Amino acid sequence: MTKETTSLSCPTCKKPIEWSDRFPFRPFCCERCKLIDLGEWASEGHRIPGEPAFDDVLSGELEQPGTRH
Image (cartoon, rainbow, N blue to C red; front, side, top):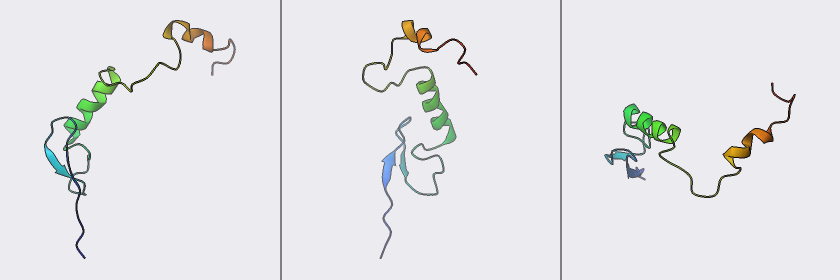
């Protein structure tokens, strides 16, 4: 019985990679592509579709006085 390896493209640079131990940063091809993707999420370049859970203008009202740790 042979073990099939799943192939996919790096989400950042589109380089073809395989889902194996040869690519420790999978689904990215390298650490650089992984960090580029993280930066996109941190700067809100990537977003999950949908309505916000709360309005940022009123988010300060969600904290009760005296409950901060």
